[in-house]
Amino acid sequence: MTVSLPLLLMALFWLSILLLGYIYVGYPLVIAFLARFTWQPPALQDQPAPPANPRTISVLLSAHHEPLTLPRKIENLLTSSAAHQIQQILVGLDGADEETLAALRQIEHPVLKVVSFPNRRGKPSVLNDLAALATGEILLFVDARQTFEPDTIEKLLQRFDDPHITVVSGELKFLTSAHETTASEGVGFYWKYEKFIRKQESRFRGVPGATGACYALRKSAFQPIPAQTILDDVLIPMQAVMQGGKCVFEAHATIWDTPAKTTQHESTRKRRTIAGVVQLVLLKPALILPWKNPLWFEFVSHKLLRLASPWLLLSALVTNLLLLPISPVYPWLLGAQALAWFLAIAGAIVQSTGGQLRYCAPFLMFATLNWTTLLAEWDALWNRYQVTWKRAG
Image (cartoon, rainbow, N blue to C red; front, side, top):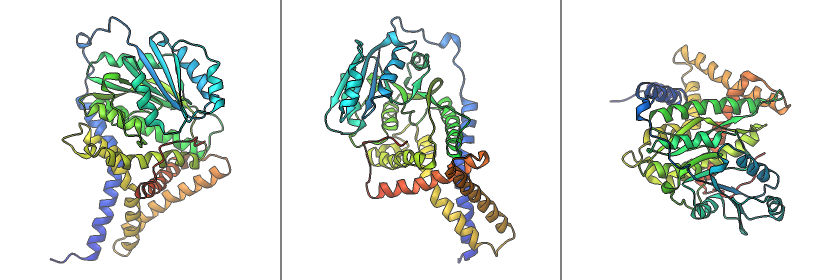
């Protein structure tokens, strides 16, 4: 049986469109549907009693050159409503510099312990070493730059009243201003979209990863991670999940950050993150095995399939061009694709002048994300994983 070329092109075109639709629209709707019809708030009589003694916390913070942000972050932690539960603030300086050390020496507090590592090894090695020093029941992983609300830690800890929960992720929000660029508008839009997905995943079975700027883990569930790991905030929670725990998203545990002002800054962050997804599969192949990974469906749909997105976009564009003579519907579909790319380019041009074009922001973010995915896959192909970091902007 011979299949004609037009039929093959049509099949490839519609398969590409359907997969793209599933990745960006279908999966969020499916997971929202599953969450809606499976999640039930626990009955009051089923809620476990709070612990007799407050849970103790060990804060783990890995940093490199942060002479200004670290003192602010430590003060932020020590003025939280759960400050009395913080047993340790362990700051690991990865390749410490004198300026940062001098800033930390000005802080005198019994819970603060600074561990200086002379050679830069990367965040995973620092976190492994800090976790070994931790004595608290709960490990709180934080970054230096972001700011906590006074009750952020308290909200995280409340979720551990459920004995099945081993990881709790906070909610990252972005500060807005009247001078936002198209890029920062796009970042805000994308993060709202991501938070919607994470919230539904949390209500259904669990989230395949956490917000690196703020997540809490039962110390008993911590397992060291390979020194070359890029996405520690995915691998550490997923190792806990694969031990039988649950990772949830706490929308009331708020952390504030500033969005990237340009697509270049955001692309720098995302490129490393996306390359890290490829690396995860190589470091922990069990993640893609449904009988090993309790969140296999979520991990594949939310993380892995997005790696195919730029190739599906290319396939949809090329096959659409080749199908133009076949049916009058294909010129209209090509026009829709062209309009989307035009809005992305317009957003990039406006952003280059420091301006904003609100309706272009989602299209610019989408185009940037897919271009960044290609660059990240190139990095992964050549094993260009950078475990040490520097500020993206």
